[in-house]
Image (tube, rainbow, N blue to C red; front, top):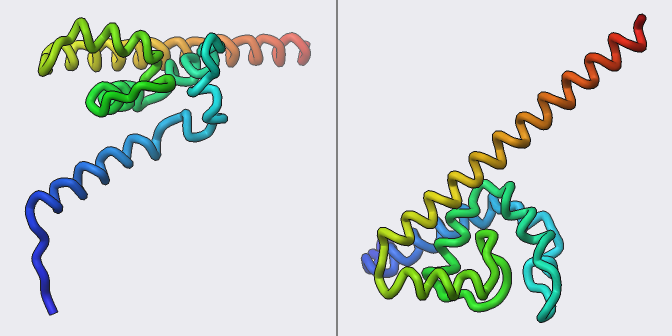
Length: 135
């Protein structure tokens, strides 16, 4: 028995699979979701801190902008920040959206470099302490 799948259905399945791929790698999946959906006037600092170190931040932001997500922190941006972004982008401005993704990726690289420098610094301090205690 064989069957065929309509091309548009196949394309939707591929898109859904791709969207799920970045979600599976998102750091927010390991954190309390309430941090990303605070009460009105609540702090978004913790959620944004998680986003800064997330490797899929740009994908998350792209998803939120494409799907008009109106609530929560997505890609490190609040609802208000995303609304401003949408107004600045205008309808169908893909170049500006790519610029935003590039900026998010640049921030991710900077955060990764900072974490590496911190770990190197801590490693050197541990070595110094070990040498000092051995003497």
